[in-house]
Image (cartoon, rainbow, N blue to C red):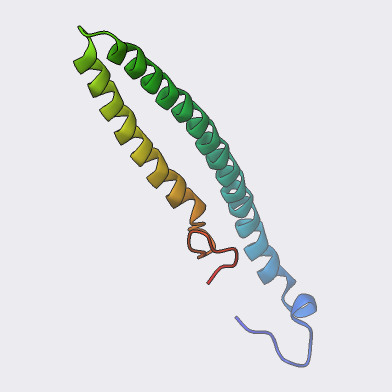
Length: 110
């Protein structure tokens, strides 16, 4: 749909643009709201993951001090290392700003 060049699009075609905006704005607001909720959930998950990692390391240290549970301590350290790697990968993905095209460590989008 195009408007004649002699008149303003806002004065000649308001019903058309109004319909588009009425359909687009609620979806955009919902998209932004969901993005904020997702960001908060990731921040909470990161905080919980750090606590989990710290607890694994502490239990591994305690288990390693005892001769009878040294193997358990080794397994806990291995679990903590895998968890740390997964968390680092997740943080790298989140920091890559997939929504604007920026790469990790890059401040401006491509």
